[in-house]
Length: 233
Image (tube, rainbow, N blue to C red; front, side):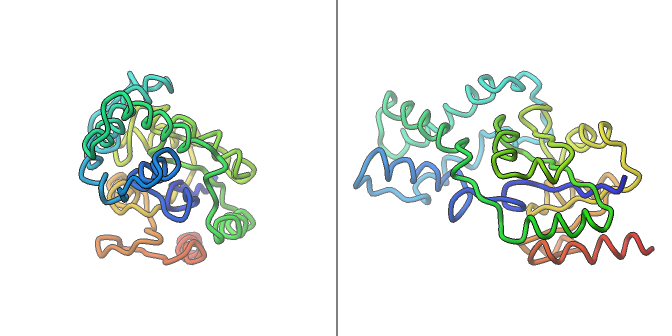
């Protein structure tokens, strides 16, 4: 098996016009508190720490049940609402709404280049899997987008207890599939690219250029030449 490992959020799919928890909190207020006067920028200072992926060196097996995971994250969202002026009870209610809106598959969409890129690589003999730092409902979102027809496995940090770039995050997928060759593709230079390369897995950074990445493709269409070159070698 030649395996192409894909990040999910920001690589294969996005939520709304832009992806981000700060945007989500502002979006919830648009619906729940019309005329609120806050933007995504209002929440960013309060969401820079506290998610499991902010400490990828720390395993969190205790959060592998969905409610345990959300019980650790909802207070972070509520504190962000409190920080901009909402009382604790209302902040907790808004955090609950944010949870439900985030996991709604209808809010997610594939990038236009996702399916064509995966189909072309499948035709060239590559097998696809998803490796993502994400919420417990990732599999449901992936299935709703039709991606489960194109990928053989989904490995989510909320299920394994390990966040990329932790070596065990990659091992959870590789030990399951045991490919003869594997490449990582993602939009996060630290979690996806440098994390994979530290384990000897070649990687391609996509969508967000960073000089630390040896290989970069602006779109997913640009990934195939790197993989073809590897096969030819």
